[in-house]
Each structure stands twice: as structure tokens, then as C-alpha cells.
Image 1 (cartoon, rainbow, N blue to C red):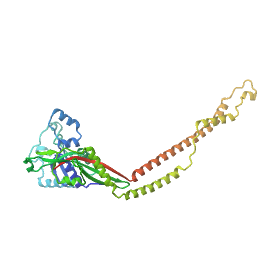
Image 2 (image 1 turned 30 degrees about the vertical axis):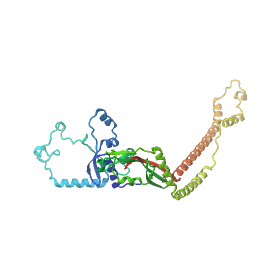
Image 3 (image 1 turned 60 degrees about the horizontal axis):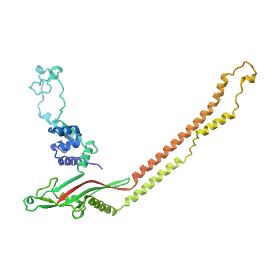
Image 4 (image 1 turned 180 degrees about the vertical axis):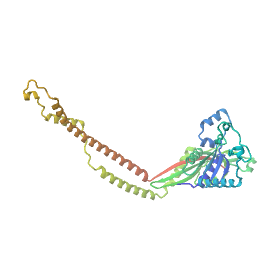
Length: 397
């Protein structure tokens, strides 16, 4: 799913107008707007500033933005406007006698304005404009962070509404008040998902007086003038159906409607899932079937080492062999005997490490297999997900 620049602009303008933002400049490629306090709180992330305003009662100063919906067209319009302005204005001819060839951006014939920094450091570049008059510039295209933020703010602010139908002018002068009938409207999003995906919106309404359920409730509301303010000379009837029972009735109605649909797509998705799982199982079965050397326990290794040492004949003292009274044991022979046992221990350790590494690799392969299988089921398994994205109370005549 994607949105064209025109669709993005229509959505953003609808959101800004709903929050009473002031549109200062508008074109097919951009809009310059001064945010309302409600929009500023939702989009600028300035909780400390608004906390200060609420505590002190100081007048709030909201921020201004230029939202660019088509960057290429906007840049072309800017360049065309600059070229047109350059052609309309005469070139500035510097006066070497007065400014030494530098005009510091002043018009012809007007002396440059003297500043404190310019008096000591010469000509200084103009600083960016700061404060409330600054207009921030942002590109708002599909997928941008600002558009995602507007989506979230609209979803949070419009999750539940309470609206009243506005009465005609003759009703305001009538002797008897008009009667409102309360309706609960819920917009459900139904997702049919497998390796493919399809979404539907079902806007259902139920009367809290009679329990009547209307499908496509939005068409009923589009023909009416709704406002959050209760009109004069109007009377709201007491509801006979609770909100909980009305919501349960709408869910039951939608479930029955979904049961009547054709689910051949789910059977085909299940067949594709079975095929993918068969291929996955065949591959990893061949990999996991390979023989892995067993890891020898430390006790077994120790006992084998002791048997090797026990089978070896202990060295005979050199004193008894030569029968020399003053002979002493030679340290080199002892070192040679110790070195003779080292190759056996190192060879055993190498085999043990090799076996342990093989077991670790096998466990990692099993984990990879389980992960791939879980991902495959999540991607291909057919499922139907129903979500209530918005709701509201509508008092209609």
C-alpha cells in the first residue's frame, strides 16, 4: 500500500483543518501552516513549554511549518520564482568610494547599517531567524517520520468521538424540542492475511434505543451536519442498550458476516504452507541426520588416563641398575618421562573439543530449523484479524 503526493496532501490538510490550524500559504506541492495549540501539542513534542504555559497562564505561541508534499515540484517553483525576481529587480552597482566594493547586501544608494559586531569584526553574515516567527520546512511524503506522526496523532485523537447532529434554523424557533436518538458507531478493520494480504473496512452502527444495526453507517453520517456541540432546543433520549451489549452485538453481527465469505484463498494458502514446510523439513532432515561424534564424559577420560599410566612400568631408580653407591637420579630422564605422557593428553583434549563443537553446531542447526519453521508458519498460515480502529457516539434526529 502506498499514497501519492496528492493523497498525502489531502490527508494532512484534512487533519490540519480539523484541528483549526491557520493555513497561510498553499500550493499543489506544499502548504505553510500555523499550528493550533492542540496540533502543536500533538506534533512538536514540547511538553515543558506547554507545562510552563499552563502553569503561568502566559500567552501560547505555536510553531509554523512548511510541509512539502512534492519536493521536485516545490524546488522547481522556488527556482522559477527566484529567476523571475532576479529579472524584475535591477542589478546592484557597488560604490567603491563609499563601501570599498562591498555593499553588505544593502540596496543601491543606501548606506549599510552599522552593527556592533560589524564595528569590531567587519561584515558579519546574517543570522538565521529564531523564535516564534521561524517557519520550519519539512518534506512530508509517504513513509516519512512526520507523516507517521500525523497518522498516530489522528488515530489517537480520533479513536472515540461524541457528535451531535445540528438542527435546522426553524427548529431553534420551535416550541417543542427535537429528540436525539443515540447511536454507537464502530469502524472495524478486517485483515485477510497469509503470504498475501487484503484489508476491508466495515463501519457498523447500532441504535441504543431499538438495537437496530446498520451496515455502511458512514453513508448515513455523510448526509448530516455533525458537531461536538449540543444544539439548542434539542433533547437526548436515554439509551436502553448498554455500551457493552451494543459492542457485543456489533461483534456478533460482523462475525456472522465473515462466516458467509468464500475462504478458498485460505485453502490455497494452506497448500502453499504445506509445500514450503515439506521442502524445509526435507532439507534440515538431511542435515540433522549426519552422524555427530559423542562427547566423552570427564570421568571416562580420567579413568582411561589412569589405565594408561597404570599399564606403564614405573621407572627403576638408576642407583639400583648401576649399583653405584654415590649415584643420584638424573632430572633429564624424569623430564623425558613426563613429556612422553603429554601427547596422549593433548590428543584426548582435541577430540573432546571437536566433539563438543559438533554438538554445539548441531544444536544451533536445530534452533535455526525451528526458527525457520516458525517464520514460515507465520508468513503462510491463513488468518483473519479484526480490529476496532475508531468508534463514537452519534446523536441523530
